[in-house]
Length: 257
Ligand code: IPE
Ligand code: IPE
Ligand code: MG
Figure: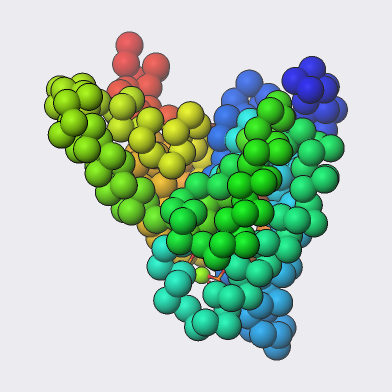
């Protein structure tokens, strides 16, 4: 599949984007579904429904353009505080979409993974999630990670508890705790940190998303509401990303001389 990816990206990548600096891992805060719907006089849930299409299109585009991982924020630990009917609609939507799209994901060699506290989700959704992760686990194409019941602070606290327990049991020494060990205990273990985080609907905050992982990730914010986010918008985000000077606290090559 890798050769096919390279071939496709060579054909389809817009000519003003540089293949060698395409981000490895893109994360997205899919925000503005409710406002998108409200503007059109629809109930908020219509925005969530439309948002699914935008995500499917972005996944396909990432795959076409040679991006290796896409992580999408679907439901935060704070989103439980929304009205019950909206929360219930979202849980049912996740389950329905997962069931409906699995065959296509298999056909496209997508590896699905859910990140977050999955034990807090409805049981029927947990089952669907476990099945889709199992079924796609050997796929070699793009890694598609869906953050559901995800909170960055909770993720960090969870890792702390696991590590503290290992210290208590004498399995590791306190001096063994470093970046790597910590990362291995996050929900995102095994994934590289996002190179680019896109947030739609104009809000300039992380809203508890990937707090540890975003230490040096580039952030791009667009005013567009999530259901309207498309290939052209993504192209703009990548153009902006490719102009950034990622210094990681050091000096850039020219100044460093
Ligand atoms: C993002 O859109 C989707 C979820 C949080 C599930 P919103 O529902 O937050 O839409 P706005 O921000 O209210 O417009
Ligand atoms: C972040 O959006 C969560 C998701 C997109 C799933 P929110 O709409 O929940 O964030 P705030 O409340 O504007 O910070
Ligand atoms: Mg929102």
